[in-house]
Length: 254
Image (cartoon, rainbow, N blue to C red; front, side, top):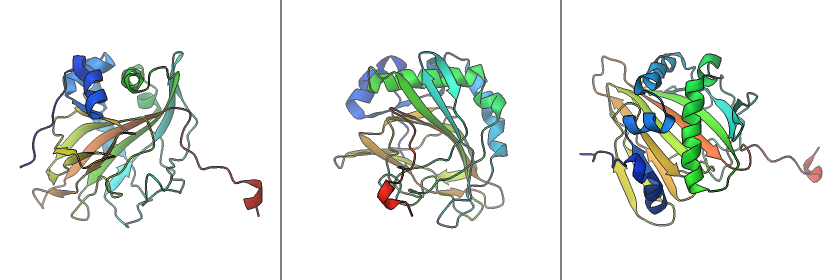
């Protein structure tokens, strides 16, 4: 049986991130981090019923639905960046790296709301704990639904990986009629690891992406006659800029 998540008190977050490279906060702690009532976070749940199919899956699957947004967080506030492709190098995503993946944008009244800005500012404070002195965070937001359309859904088809950022936040939004979806976190420089299953809506896994790698195991329906899905909100914060394809050098132009 999968162990429960190892929860961290918000007051101990900095110590936990420094010692282990990851932390799990329950829903109340995430709400406190954002300075919002928990119900204001939960009110976003309806957006997961309006996620387009991810048409970039190289395994041919139809189990992932998502949207995407990019923002910048600094001392002046939270600003929405022009809509852009999601891109990762092959070093971090051997399955989908090296290609520009365009996804439909998130709803403006959601991504541009004061409540969402409050959540991003709270996560930026977490990133500041890892990288003191950073002046600006480049944020990518991905609401995901992994379903069991084909009998099995894969939250991380690329396997255990890093994302090439500084902080990764994986917020569990909902689990409906599924088994599996176990979270696994490993030290990137050694065999140490931990496994658990996030099951509380609006609990969050925070990862120091330079120190740990992570994956989630496939999901399957409990009742084959009913739809099954796992909804998450993945938010990454990175110093220095968004990940973008490197420009071609003059010698490589046709």
